[in-house]
Image (tube, rainbow, N blue to C red; front, side, top):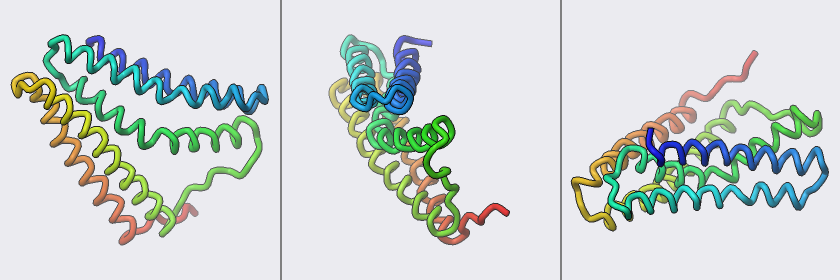
Length: 179
């Protein structure tokens, strides 16, 4: 595995570590400002990944699937980061702090709306990630070095289409309540 792949793994681990540190600091140590500081570090992790990926390509590396995944990760992290922090926050408060309402499993129309909201966020993540991919393709300006990036755009567009179809299907066949 190459350096970029390890950087993506480290960024993902770092993302969840700073979230956990933020939640522990906020709820267990009652240091709300310090907790917010840790949670605010998540965009810095994205910036590190962007710099490492851009530097690698600038120094002449041929773009690989790993470089393309970095762009996907950045788009998803930018768009879904806040909702992932909120998701973790709700569960931390309920399961660790034993406070607050139990997270509810959505069903029916509420689940369909929630799923569609996630799919629309996925569209935005695609737009952002595709912009990173397009920028890398443009600046490298060598189709032989950017095939993996172009290929990722096509695969991601297919995944996005499937995501949208699944979300739409919940309006037709809603998720039933557990009995």
